[in-house]
View 1: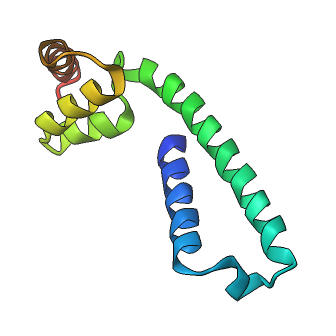
View 2: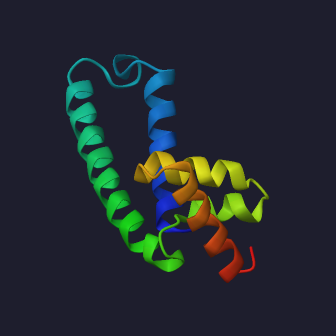
Length: 108
């Protein structure tokens, strides 16, 4: 599992925990604010680390993230193109060309 995927898994677990219970229910009034501040710092740090990981991992496939590569492996080319467009601001033609090139170069 890549660091990016680990970050997404951690962020998802934290979010689900926070949404499923009130901090006051499991920590009490005195500990809840400290815990929430700690979680906020941890999530912020993980997010920033995730951004660094994304930047580093993009170099591996000439601009595609591991999740977009996996979309190609799963035969979800349209989803990969959509993801590239949303992330980069590219037009449809440019994103499709990029995805097609990487798909051909890497036999995906």
